[in-house]
Length: 385
Image 1 (tube, rainbow, N blue to C red):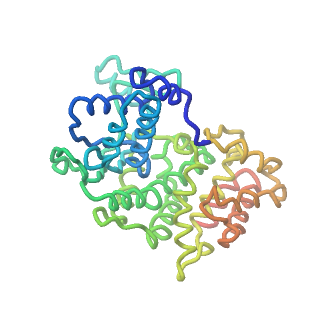
Image 2 (image 1 turned 135 degrees about the horizontal axis):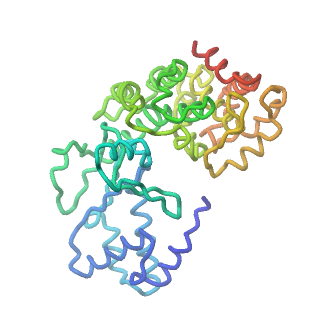
Image 3 (image 1 turned 180 degrees about the vertical axis):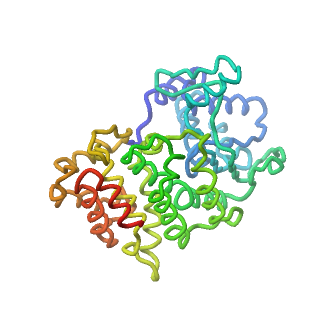
């Protein structure tokens, strides 16, 4: 969050490759062995589900290597070789396959088929490891074709091999328009309305209308088209096949995690595109402000029945809930003047919503959701029919 190194990374820098523990240190140490064994070229392909993942991997490994050179653990030529992308490349990739944590329903289904020892193990850090994976059928892997020592014919297995710009455009298409904004809108409203599964939300006429509005009507006019995948076709598959999949037991509570970190990209990029267009205006939108208002209503930790509900972890949760303190369901007037610091924060939305002409609409929708228990549903019905 602060841009500082983790203690384990600092220790690895000080103690050298023989004591590598952090993932980036281990990669740098293995590359040092490769350098010493003859400098054979290699591509290090990141499968992290984040934008510009190859760039991030390269920067991290090089930072470790530079520290070892500085501290006398490796020659300067090693860092130079590692930084030469004609010798060691770090291709960018875009990976898309919804894979929630191992689900009890799938474990029981496997047990009923006579398959034993399928119980997941929860680690001390509350991650789950299981002998099975519950995941969806559709999957996309787009990889920058930069391999200095050759590669298998990955395209024969369905991998899109392309250039860096196309990888970036495909990532942008998915994250800003065709999947992630729809997921976040479903997440916050699913929590408010008591849903436990994303698939169940897809039977709700207002929620399906909301994501169709955000995706097709508001997103596609400014979508980044990568050329290798149809944005409309991608949304079609998301709405008709992926999100309604009852065999993918994903939860709105999981998707709602870290929403403050997702909103600037998932909604903010579309808002900025509207603001920059001479023919479009953020103030003309309905679905996206409804999603933002729903998120703020979610942060109150009270569901649409007026009952307390857990709010998923978020690095800005304490700050946001402090800003929203004193706002109560059943008392719309309690919100007056409270939202301005949030709505005018460009860090949260990618731009100042007041300057974009959207703050009043979001505030109005949020206030309507405070009227009484059931007001969230009533607001959705008002704006979506």
